[in-house]
Image 1: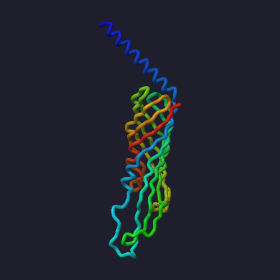
Image 2: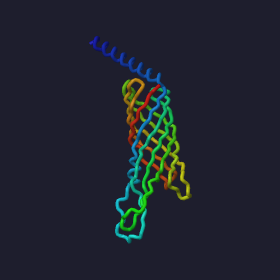
Image 3: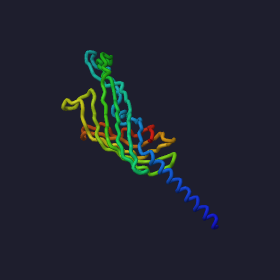
Image 4: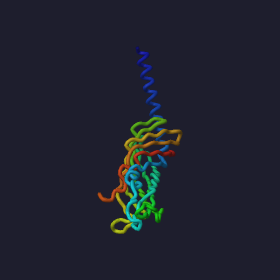
Length: 218
């Protein structure tokens, strides 16, 4: 019985030493940079092709439609500085875009003209914070939060004739998991990004729910 207890205590101490060593080694690479891609679920639900086209009005009548929406998804770059194995601070830049055609049709649905140079973009800049609550040499699980500003611009104008507007932006990572190989890693995050100027100018809501990224620590 004493032998079993001694063996169990020895294994426990060894595992704690290995974990401490891994955590200390992780701290040796305090800097992290990664580039990622995220979805545009919100944008694809709000801005999409018309469900019907008028075909029963006089041929001389004209109508304009927004068609052929192009959702270019989120591309983002993030830097993190780790102060503890469980806590880090950083900053992120995220850009996303939606483009479309403005098509002029007559009352019979015949296309008369098409303008393809229509788009809007969101440029988000924010500081970020991350909490790593499960650490392993090969796998980390974490959550995070960011708050900053969104610059919305493009070919459209608001009620005051402005092409560009600035609003608040927030991004949260509900849960993220990274798989590590030496100093390189890949990650998958679940969360959401929100950006708005006021209740009547919502640029994003539950956008960038899923993210994939690759990065390096140094």
